[in-house]
Length: 133
Image 1 (tube, rainbow, N blue to C red):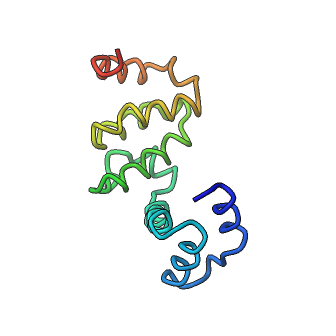
Image 2: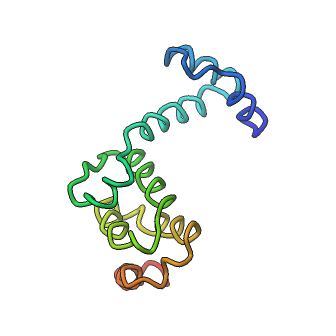
């Protein structure tokens, strides 16, 4: 799938189509494999909690069991991180599979470089120092 094919898909395919028809139309633009992955990933995004719940009720959140669901949750959290929510972000990273800890934090740092000056980040970095250095 090319960037042009994805862009054309976004402009031309009606998202109100039935899931089967939407998948077929998308597969015609980008191929069956990438289309299937994209549709499955979209479902994970639909099931994500609100940001308020994510930051205020981190300990009570239902964490997806599968890696794809956890990855969606990790990206979602990293895209909305701020220094103020770093304690909850670190707590969430600890509830996800350990293989996501560093990619999740790197995505968060790219989004908001100021998080590295927080106490929560320092604690997280000390815990994962053996993997980072």
